Image (tube, rainbow, N blue to C red; front, top):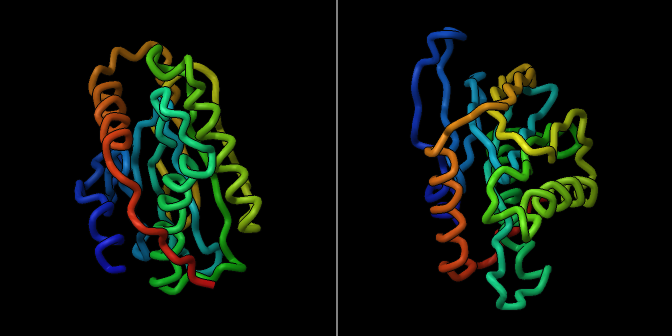
Length: 202
C-alpha cells in the first residue's frame, strides 16, 4: 500500500518566486498532498486534475490523470475507469492519512480540453471530464468550482491551504513539452497492466 503512495508522488519541488512560496509541479500520472500550504501547479491538455482539500484543516492535494484510450482493443468502460478511480483514491487516501476528514472535503476540477488531434477523435478530454465529475458525485464530495472541456490547455495554480485557484488559459500555446508529456503518458497507460485496486478509506 505504501508503494502506491510513493510511486505516483510528484518529486519536482521548488520555490515559486512569483508567489513567494514553496511549490510542487505535478506531471501526468502524478499527485501531491500538502498540510503546509504548498502551491500545487500543473499544465493540462486533455488530462484532468482534481484539487481536493479539507476546508477546516487546510490539507489539500492535486492529481493529474487521464483515462487510457483503448486503442481499438474494445476495452470496457469499467476497465478504463479503474485508472481514474486509482488516481482519485490514491489522492483521497493520502489526504485522509494526513488528517483530512471525508465529510469536510471539497473539490475543484480542471482540464479535459480537446487540444491534441491524436486524442480528439476518441473524445479523451470529454471522457476524463465526465469521469471525474461522476466519481466525485458518487463519493459525495461537492464540486465547488470547475473549468472543463473547450479547446485550450490550462495552467492551474492551486493554493492547497486556502483552496484558492488561478487558471491561466493558454490560448496561443506552442508548448510541445505539454503535448509530448501527454503522449508519453498515454503510451505508458496503453502498455501498462492495471495494478490492483486501492482500497478507499471510509
